[in-house]
Image (cartoon, rainbow, N blue to C red):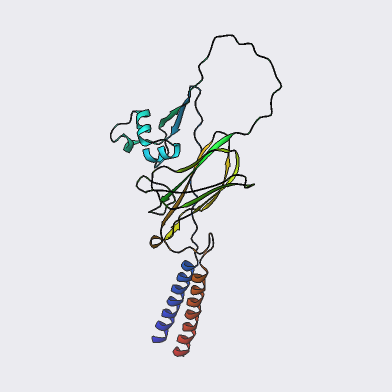
Length: 257
């Protein structure tokens, strides 16, 4: 009877060690951040935004480069109306002014079509304190100051840098040429990333592209060893536990004979 109990205990202990090793070797990967294009104006010049799940007035305002008060005024939102936004609801975020038409006849001379020039756009970076670690900027989560941001094109012709502050507005780089850009963020000391810290963006003419980066205090997350690699240390620790369990199993079998 004692031998049987010792064998059962040995099997249970080995299974427990295998489970611990499996959990220890599971990696922690940063989540991709949200990426957003400014909506295209309608035929009448109105720029409309379609409300998505979990959207708030402040998140919609941040995405579209306007203030919450401007969003409220454009849509006549009063009091607690922002608490009752419906998924699929359309909100006005701006109106594109059209040039005034003239009836005066103007004589024009046809000339050869010039080579199209490249257009410009705007890249904005928003670094926020991701308290719950879900890689999404929420209304209750504050901006994170002290982050060093970099925007660089593939040829290093455009190389822009800046430092985030604690204002609600993202740091923006305006009137930069269209093309492919590498965006990177160095988060302040004492924080761990909850999103990737490097992002490649294709900027088109007229785009206002906002990219969110998140981080939270080091005490709130497990340490991340490398950008996308599981913890080597924890993996070795799991192997040690398995070896100890196997050794204990043979020892218990020897005692039971």
